Length: 224
Image (cartoon, rainbow, N blue to C red; front, top):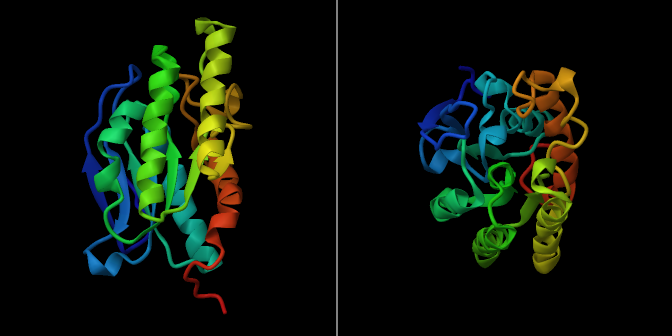
C-alpha cells in the first residue's frame, strides 16, 4: 500500500463492515507529534479510506499531493473508516480533531443512506460533528451524499436536504455531492458500482480541492 510521500506514516484503523468488504483506513500523517504541522482531517467512510484502491490513490492522498504542489503547508489525515455511518463518525470525531487541525472535511452519510437509517438522527449526528469543529474554531467543508432510490422519493429528498440544512445552520463550506460527476458512471467506478476507481478518485480530489479554496486563504504556504 502506497503513501503520499517519503515522510508519511501509514497508520491502520479497523472499521465496521459496509457490506462490500472492509479495509483499514490509512492516516496519511507525517510521523511524530510536533513535526506533523498544520493538519487537514478528512472524516469519512470507505469512500474516503479508498476501498479497493492503493493508499496513494485515495482522494485524501491526492489532496496531499496537490497541497505540496501548490505550496500549502498542510498534512492531510485520512480519517476514513470503511462502513462508518454518521453515528460511528461522531463517536470518533473528538479524537480525530486532536492536534493542530486547521480544516475538517466531513464526508459521511453514504452508509446511512445505504441502510435507510433515519434522516433525523443523521442530521443530529452531522450537527454534533460540525459543532465540535466550530467550538474549536476549525473551518469545515461538508460533503453531501445521495441515498439510493429504493427507499422512495420522500426519503431521498429528505436525505439530500439534511446536508444543505446543516451547512446552512453553521454557514460552512459545502459541496452538495461528494461523488458528483463520478457516481453512476461505470468507467469511473469499481465493479460494486459504489466506490470510485483511481480515475474517479482523481476527479473527486479535484472537486474537493476546488470546494476547499475559500478555506485555504491565509493558511501557511511555502509560496511567497
